[in-house]
Image (tube, rainbow, N blue to C red; front, side):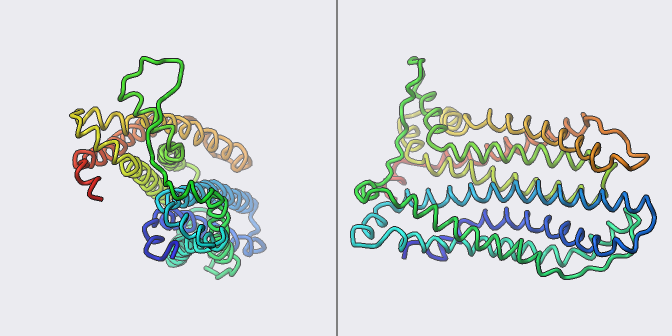
Length: 378
């Protein structure tokens, strides 16, 4: 009863993020395994150097892309579970009062593993279907002998089965910890009131207090906004800057995965902000606060974190590519020295501003239609 398939499907964002991670990791992991098997056939010294560089690149791509998205998915999963327990505290409290143990309630949260399985299995299947084309481009680009696509059982085990089990265990463990809350606290439910900011400055306006209260209440959403901007900045600039060190397909894949990941995390974060503060928004609308003031109070506080994430992503991609060129391609002749790509930076920041503000505008429009009457009816 606690959480069923219908509730789980609502959190499809986890599936999409893991789809992206497994898709990119499957391509490079499978290719590096087949490349290692063909190493004995490579006799040319330059080809051996390029092979080592390609193997190292695959490890870096899998580690950076897969690791970042895995960490984000864990945070997102914990956020969903916490939100579900907060919203269904009364039902859970009643069940605990009736004698249901914390573990008995928590084990039903293992259904989140279904989201993980859907995302990882779909990502692996899509990558395997695309793999022949990927191999063709890689072989031609790096002058390797023809390498056939081989099935490696360890890849789906590592990228599909293991994440499914891992996330199911994390879901049960985290929900078990959250459900240790006393029954009386669960029965009271989470009111979601905005706490007054108790800083040194006491001359804050009401709207400033609302803004600070919203930020302090949902720190996890700040993380999602930061990661969204970080991903967009780093992957977009990296895809532009890697054209001299990798094939165009790798650059396009990196940009596409980064943009999709960024869109999902940003939209989930901003739409969640509006949803969680629907009561406060309806009250501000009822008391006659202008639409733009409400939007600024509810969403404006996240804008600095987005641009901080963009700046950190810019520095991260520059440092990572600089390290890769010096270490991975250090023994390769005729490799151009890596410099900061200012043109890529300008294109990325302009498109990011348009993208970010468009999402904010879309979610701001939802604020107009949140009425006190509708909230009370719900």
